[in-house]
Length: 318
Image (cartoon, rainbow, N blue to C red):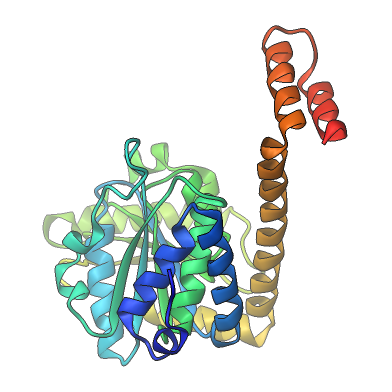
């Protein structure tokens, strides 16, 4: 699956899509080809602001991202949207179909939208999305938006690969505060209460105060106080304010060195995660180790040995 590197670096969307497909392939040959490609384009990557966007189902993530992306394009930016979709249990592919949910944005020359199935190959969400980000940056996209499906494990994974994490909330503070995990609030660099228009306005302001109080007692970056803002993606209200907040965060983070340290720490964490996963893959491919794995699984499920001792024997045999 040959990818024209020159076309990719020139911003050709077809070449970019093909490159991302290559990184998502489960075939060992494609995986090797993808890594060689990534090594070639690595010097051309890293020149973007990476923004993670999450929120509870029904909060209007796609509507917000479309309005936000269109605003950024008007400002002269090239925007890539990587949507972490749940995977189909039958095909392993994405099932949400984000291009159908962002029709106007998907038609823009300076926008690229790509759903990324969350299951499957080595590294799962983290590897596929990280590699897609590098490829989008090499193709000239200077704002990368990573959308997650809801409040869960994928939020922690995405927060660990972006520069800024935006959490969208609905204007009904009581239920939201009951249902949201404290950890998600700790990850948030800004909370935006969406759908703050019409009859929802008062409820949105009430929700804003609730989250301001909640954030006040949580620990965050030493240099940054997360804000709680109101917006309406449907009416385009305060979209510019959220972008101004992100730019302010980026400027401060670059000036105090946090931006560079954070990216370096993310790359190191990514490397060690892949080390563990590659060891696991090779372990399962080794015939003797695989047989012992099956034996140890049986003994553990029967309560004949501890998981620790079983793991120890497998690693020693490998």
